[in-house]
Every structure is written in structure tokens, then in C-alpha cells.
Image (cartoon, rainbow, N blue to C red; front, side, top):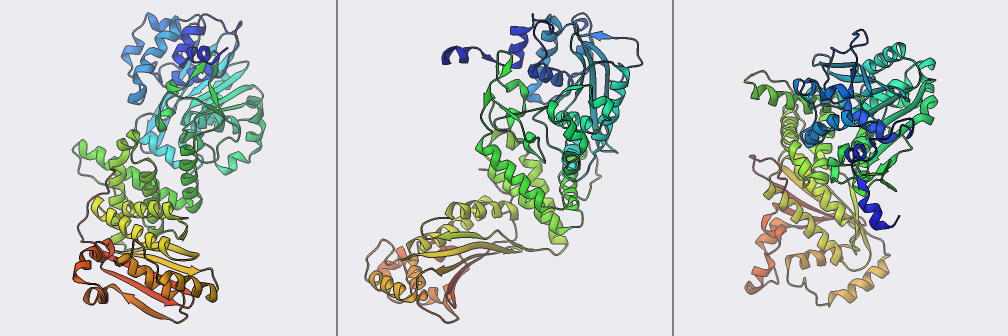
Length: 569
């Protein structure tokens, strides 16, 4: 098939029903796309907790065309997939392939007190066996909170319930078992299979996770997980985020999607080619960066710190919900561990940097900003005012410059600076680095930022990698050189740095306060150009000191007490 024909034959999982819906499972066996469709059926409400194993009524998909069940029970799905879900069941009910699937049982539990959202569906599929489909996260705050709880607690209530439900479904049925689920439902499918008994595991023919988060360490190392490895099918989109959380299944299939960014989590955007997915070689760079950010944070946090992170985010969300309902009850979002609160703020700031301009992110930006404000307030109340950024290696070949820019932006978000204040920090960092770039010879350095209440100190500590004789020769040749920085404040700073490279004593070599009072060698006509420097005009102080073979520069700025939330622009 040529490239044009391949493109024309691509479609969605709804297209698949239209294309292959006339084929029985006997003539065309069950496949991953069938499993994904059943995972999406799990989001449909057929009268949850009414259709049980003990109820003699059995509902076929075809019966949905002649009943009002679908209109009586609203869908619990995200708004971006509502239209597709509304088309799903009528298409399945009309098709020869799916119309005789029988609904044996459906359960749905949302318990705010236990922080549990669990729903599952058991289906009897002709010529296939029993399919147990676990629902992913619904739009409730309880459902999302339980997802995040997986980072510090195992099992979460839904996982424990999934193990019990699978046992009940296995006890009431015979023959092969296929488990499936999308998002959290995929996690529940694999977790339940890994923690089931040997008799249940022996019946498993497929355990499918569609962009579902990974598992805890203990489960990944368990004998049950190792036993089901041959039947696990893990599928993620190119820009997967959810599917790469925690310890994800090491072997996974990457599917092409028609959506962008995290919106690819919606399986209705996944591209189908015939009876298979349109596959890609690997996930995107963006997905890898987010994956690394989340895993670095998880590795740096204790389970208790992760608990405080989850409590903080969802206390804010629940407070917003109560305020909309007219309630004055408010939860304290802070917890007691200032280190955990710091860690949470760092993660939020990184997310703003990575995803701040994406449309999907603006939907959660306000709750995140409110969570950041609540954390900053709590840190102030506990007396925790000091913060130090990561240390970034730089040199005068511009290595590390982009990392400094990202780190400075993250700090602005972290500390709640408004757009103007954040821009000033970035401009300070840029001028400091431009001076490093202009220095003669090879020089390496380290950049970092310290914050104490509303005071910010930007540090640049440099060291030369040349011996003294080589430094003297380079500086001698550069001392008479005419360059673009000559006669400017940055040119003067560069000269000071270069002279300091020849010094071996400890002293404060330069301070901005003295420079403003006395600027020798600069004519009145040159002063306008001289004071164009952002550092000269806006910094509270600039200090250059010599400590042995190291030259350090510190730029200080204290912003007014009042501040606004960070801008996403």
C-alpha cells in the first residue's frame, strides 16, 4: 500500500466500528482496539449498581437501541470526549460484531470520606469469553485525588476494590478472561491481575492498559506481576504523560494521535489503521521531559511529602467547590512539613515552565496558582523564608545559558513574582551572563539564586582554567582592544573581571553603591549610554569579590511586599 493510500485508510476507533463492525469475533479474532472500545464503554452508565451478578436481567448492547437507558443515565466523561462517547454505544449496538455483547454487572462507587472513585463493568463476549473493564478517572475531585494518592499510598481504595471485583467476576463466570482499562482503569486492570490468585491468573488471555499510570515498587517486583507479564498490553500516545507516571510497564506500544499535547490522553484521538493502531517508534521529547520532571520530583520526595502535595492541591480544589456552593468551611492546605511544601512549589513551577502556553494547561492554571499562594502563605507562617535554586554550570562559550534562563523563570513562578518582577530577574541574569561571554580566555562558573522573603541574590561564581602566564598574555592583548562594550557599564564589569583573574587575594573588589557615586573616566556625554544597563538602573547592589582563584559576582534586588500571581504569558 502506497503512502497516500495509507493516509486515506487511517481513522479513529469510531471509524473502526464502521469499517469492521460486520465481522464476527469468530471470523476476525478479538484485538487491542476491541479492548480499547470496551475500556471506553466502562465510562457509560447503564444503571450502575442496578445491574449485578445477582440480578437475573441481562442487557445486550443491541437492547440499547430500543430502551431509554442511555438517556436516563448521564455520561461521566471529560467534556472533550463527550461527543465521541455519545456516538459510541449506538454504533456498537448496530454492529454485528458488538451487538450481542451482554452486560453482566456494573458497579460504581464514589466515596469522598474514603477518597475512592471506583467503577467496573463485566461483559460476556461471544466467541471471546469474559471481559472486565475498569473505568478511568471520572470528572469528580475525589477521582482525581485518588489518582495522585497513588504516588504515596498502595493500595489506594480503588486498587483494593479492583482486586475484590475481579475475584467476584471470575467466580461468577467461566472460560477466558480479558481485563482492560483506560487511564486509571488501566492501572486497576494490571494491579488486580497481579494481585489475583493463581486460578484467576491462569484464565487471563490479555490485560490491557491504555495510557494508564504505572505501579508501585512492590507490585512491580511481585511474583504475580511477573506471572502476567506475557499477557500485558500497554499502549500510550506520542505525547503521553499519564501513561509514563510511576513505574510504567517497560514494554509499550506508541500510537499516533490526531490531538496535541496532553489532549492525546483521549483515545478517540488515537489513529487506527485497519485492525491495528498506527504506531510510532517512541514517545515525543516533550513527553520525556515531563516524565523526567515528575520522576525527579517523586524520587526527591518522601511518601509523607507527596501526601502533603496531594493534600495541598486538593484542599484548594475542594475549597473552591465549597465556595461555589456557598459554604464558608475551608481546609488548611499546608500540612506541617516545610520541606514538602518547598518541593511542591518547585514541581508547580516546573509545570508552569513546561506547559504554561498550552491550551489544556490553562484549565488547571488557576487552581495551581491558588495552591502556590496557599503554600507561600503557609511557609511564611512557619517562618520558612529562605530558598536556594539549583546551581547551574556555565562558561564563556554560552554553555548553560538556556538553563539559567529556565531556572530564573521557574524561581519567579515559585516565589510568586508578578510578570514585571520576573522579567527583571531574567534581565539581571542575562546581563550577568553577557559579561561572562565577553571575558577573554577560558572561564567556567556557577550560577544560582537565593531568596529571603522579598530579597533576591543572583550569584555568579567563576574560575579561570588557565595558568597565570597564559592569563597575563591574554589580558595584555585584550587591554587595548576596542569592542562593542567599551564605555558601557558591562564593559567596565568585564574589565574588572579580567583584572580579578590575575589576583590571588581575598577582598570585595567592587560595589555598585560606590560606582553610582563615583564613575571615573566616564564623560557626561557617555553617561546616558553607561546607565542603559539594567543592573545599574534597577539592581539594589552589585558586588564583585575575589576569593583566591575565584571571582564572584552578586546582584541584589528587593521587591515591594505586594505581589501578584505569576503570569502565564
